Image (cartoon, rainbow over all chains, first blue to last red; front, top):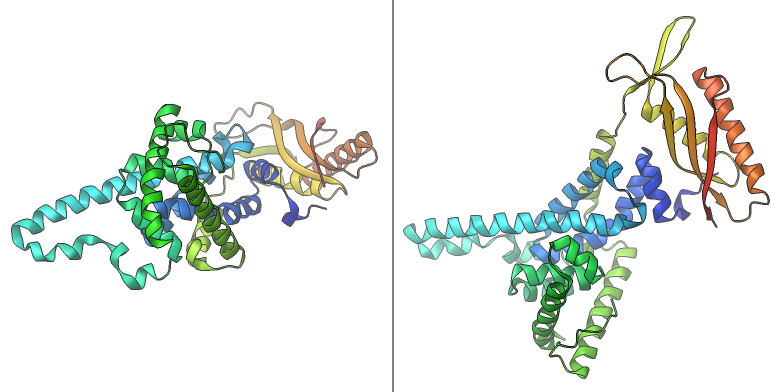
Length: 192
Length: 168
């Protein structure tokens, strides 16, 4: 008889492709933590990160039959999650710009209200201190640097896979990560 | 994760080492916290439960599959039910674990409906301790054929067994 606890990931993916919901639920349990941290690093907000991971994993379930190589499930879900987080980040910054422009016309003092949940101490208390600290450092980086760095250092993805995920060349990815590392290392000295 | 920085990386050796050390230590901490169930590094229980509910609600049942009619009338099942039956039957064989099954159907002649299953190809993983892989394959074949006959009314369905992997 099959012992569900000891099943390896490739087997879980194949069984999930066969329609086994329980196998996919095990995949959810295995990957949710790293996907959450990846999304949080890109977005800096717990609720947004949870929403993105939720949508990403449900989308992965819907598209699982399209995944040709079951061994690439990890990189595939990272790509879906990163794309989702990048879209949310883009929409959020556009919304903030629009809000800021409106507020500038009415009352500049009210801008703090539009700063988002990331600045809410009660909300952030739910997130690990080191995750928060790294996320704050990342917030100062350009989105391209932030995403490449998070995929490399948080998700452990290869340079080649990152290049595929962000649609850039491998040397570009290496350059972005090196620049991000330098700036993060400098900032890390402050909270180490 | 431990790959060194690129040659153009302006960090010096000590700074690089300190940086990598810090990254390693935060990963260790996050992994430890995740294993211990600490919610600060992972999805909340509520969000996880929502994902699983959505997945169950969106299970791909597939098209109806025509089967030999029973004395009482037509008999169809979904592709999902057929796969689930095969998977459960394979899993019930000691030393076997179902991976994925491909089904060949006859033409149904009805839109969005599968005809009679005419062949099954079962991809299976075998326990490393299995003494005879051919004997295991034969047992899986027999049991799946029997389940298809008893549960679905399919007589002498050809069943291909492909042992794709070995597991501990």
